[in-house]
Image 1 (cartoon, rainbow, N blue to C red):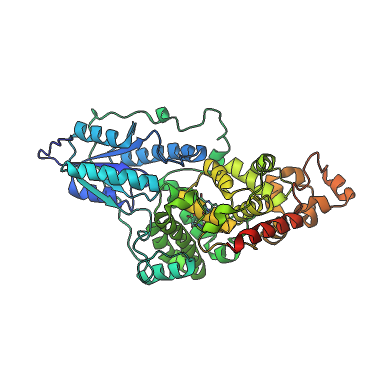
Image 2: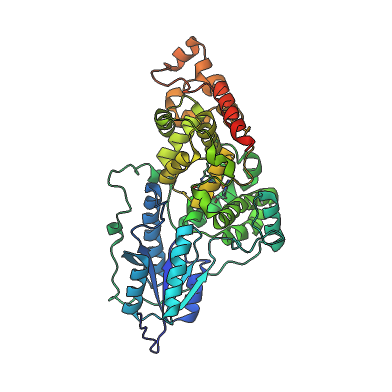
Length: 485
Ligand SMILES: Cc1cc2nc3c(=O)[nH]c(=O)nc-3n(C[C@H](O)[C@H](O)[C@H](O)COP(=O)(O)OP(=O)(O)OC[C@H]3O[C@@H](n4cnc5c(N)ncnc54)[C@H](O)[C@@H]3O)c2cc1C
């Protein structure tokens, strides 16, 4: 099929996917070491993602990230060739056009990506072509960390211990100093034609919060280390403070890799905050754990890991409640603040993700898959491994899950983690005039307080759509029904 012209000059295709960076990119580094001509390509497949095609916010991010990658490649003398179409056919066509005898890529771990890549690799190798694949996304491959006896881990603490024992000190690859130009005859489609940006401009707010690309990722990491790492252990659960790194979309798209982040944590500027650096590495450990689980239990993107939950008595006819949750109109201020932060910025604080997920799956008894789908479309960091773990963990049906009876109370969580109500005031401005004592439970405020704050319940802001105590008891009773199975 492909008849590569090996000629005197060796040509290699580097297939970029979710490794949109030049530093610590082992596929790129290996191609540069092996070939004289390099063709960097991004292929936009028609149905990439199988059951989980890329959501709107991710597509927005991808557009800007590809733009940034092209800029970085151009600065080194190359450019990104962007193609549209089925990945295999597009790759083969490009290899024929350029006479490339080899293709290099960094591995993905989603079930559909693994199936596709394995097949492409098999066919190309069968044609005598060189296919080299690498790990750029994880500290360890999901199969490298095993329990005695070879089974995968289901609990985070022993998993993380095994990762630590293996060591975190693998040095990142350096970026190439220069790259050979791509021949002008190699055409691509303009980025705009991939149709990644929304037709209705709902993304206006996103620009205020995010800048995609490798340089922006590095800058965000450096700023986080300088300004917040020392406070991270104490404040990482506070949504009202800028206490976490917000690196998640950058990590998802591979604009920065975990090895680079771990290395940054070992630098003197970070290591003076040793506790912060350790705590931060541990969070990266959760990301590793999520990929470990996705790899070994690929069905968990749609099915509960804990089989008893397959027969869980979820609520019926929940559409109105689901819509109120999606729109941030549940009457629970912390939940509503989170859902509106998500809508406006494409991101939500981790503590609040747990609270809104618990509220959906336990107080409203709506299947976690509904929440996972909504997050999937709206998060800029939507990540099949992390999202699946987060939802299954909160719903109580995943690996190392929160015990079912742990039902987050949005009022108590608000009082504890947003004590002055600054987070709620920011995202639910119609409550901004309420004093801290009532900001997380406006329905309990005396009418004089409500009036002074300009809050009219059922009018400017809803009452809670469920009674917290009653819905908690209903959830526990539902759990009892499956517990003994
Ligand atoms: C219901 C639910 C859904 C989630 N969906 C996603 C998702 O789609 N994509 C996603 O990246 N994260 C998801 N998370 C995990 C977590 O909320 C985010 O990674 C985190 O909020 C990102 O913010 P940050 O970069 O400031 O985190 P930091 O606190 O700065 O952490 C650094 C990095 O560690 C990783 N990390 C931190 N916490 C977790 C965690 N609990 N699980 C896995 N990795 C973690 C992330 O890559 C993060 O960027 C979800 C959590 C829940 C409870």
